Image (cartoon, rainbow, N blue to C red; front, side, top):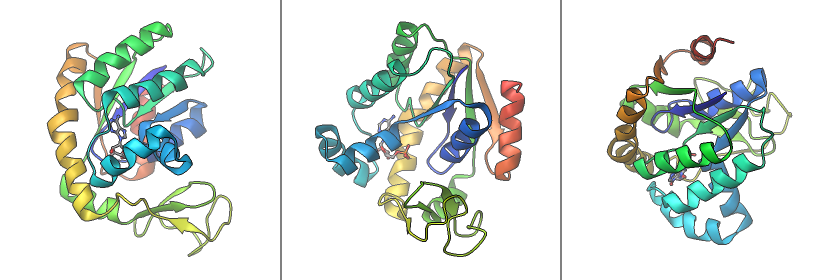
Length: 215
Ligand code: AMP
């Protein structure tokens, strides 16, 4: 099973991908996470991508498609892939078709998380994660059970993404509208697009996704 989770920044793609990994042993391929890792490690890709990411613009198709290609090739054939935050342009959608074909895989579902764009700004600017294990939280919608302590690993260190500020978020939304939303009609023509209300509670969104995947 290979699926794309599509939706503007803050729609819940990362949260739902993590839940799918947990429930079904699928692998999350998040180009945002791969790029943040490259920035942290100071690799040539990271050095090139950092300023673009800080502005909320899109990193080049070549870079992100190469990252996806490398990561998918390293996966066992039987493990399902969740593409999270990729593809984001028409060029990347074409690249993904080629990468999947090369790996004898095909696309089963494109799930679009539909959201109210204004509510997203609040959602994004309130989110943070555990600095140790990466568990995701939100100040009001999904705080840790005990304030200041990670539910998963009990660390007391948290962090925020540098691009989760209002100005950058607005640029990221614009990029989504201009470059990512236009790839949906191509997938619709293949009959593989399904929509889920991304404003629902996290568990309800997860149930709706499971119903689509029939598992
Ligand atoms: P995300 O974690 O998916 O919100 O991505 C964070 C940032 O990484 C984006 O604002 C882009 O600058 C960059 N990025 C992530 N995925 C892609 C992609 N598929 N294409 C281009 N840039 C990307």
